[in-house]
Amino acid sequence: MTKSEDFDDLHIEEASDSVVEEALVKAADTVCKECMQLQRKENVLVVTDPHTSTIGQALYEAAARISDRVLLVMMPSTHRHGDEPPAPVADLMRKQDVVLAPTRYSLTHTRARMQACREGTRIATMPGITMKMFTEGGMTTDFNAMQSAIAQLGKSLKRQRKVEVSTENGTSVKFEINKRWELGDNGICNRPGQVTNLPAGKIFAMPKEGTMDGKIVIDGAWDAAVVDEPLTFKIEAGMVTKITGEGSDDVKAMFVEASRKLKPNQQANVWTVAEFGFGMNPRARLVGNVLEDEKVQGTCYFAFGDNTTLGGNSICGIHVTGVIKNPTVRIGDVELLDDGDIRI
Image (cartoon, rainbow, N blue to C red):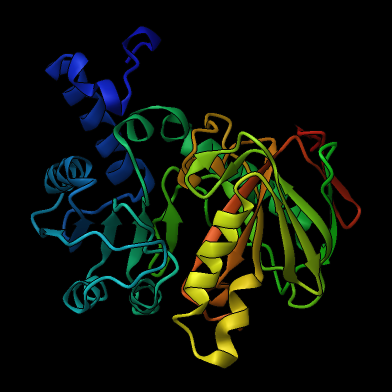
């Protein structure tokens, strides 16, 4: 598809049927052949919802061209990232070789996804995927080349635990990471138990609980929107203690609402800084969708809330991400980013 044929979801009807179909087929084939490396006799489940059903159908058809053991399940849309799918869907997920999940909200940080992976299912989640994201930007990268780049950088970070992040906008935070850097979000998901986002392309880790202090200024994207005015988070001992900036009242209200659904001894978990990572996808763009935003090369991100999928103790069912533009990031003795320029 040429650049002049670019189309967005609001004006998808303006593109010809043949252009739309060609783009869908190409992207779905990339997922099944290049990313998942689907085999002829594998059991495949496509989980979708009414918001992403066109992409779900395209993935089903692409998978069916390879295997005759493909199921398509339409489930009701959940209410937020991290909500569990219906029990019958969770049961089906753990019985498959491959699960493709283009859904409005993320299944990545769910018990259903974790249980399926423990039983050997390899899974690609695509939370909030849109037609434009599915056919352009980060999904058009060379996934094999990106896998190699992530693996190579991972060698330099293997024993590095201390992280410093700063920006001209005021971010200044230090912390340690817990255990290891996660290198699997590279778009190639060909081994049992693996999980990846698509579009892929990041390296990430869980901040060691209690080690983070400083200030995080989110100036790129927050949750599902590009940021107009920065949001500032004050961090003490790994927990958010104050949020300021335009829209901060709405952000605080979201976390307070999530906390009310928890037991009293778990309510504070929503304020945990749960994840840190940085983008490695040279084709990804800042579009106001966390699925692609956190993969943009030259940015980094912090997520807040539940960290249990990374081995932490913060159980709270909410996981919200903010992206920082043009950061300077130092990891141990590795100067990773200098004002957004990757140094290695």
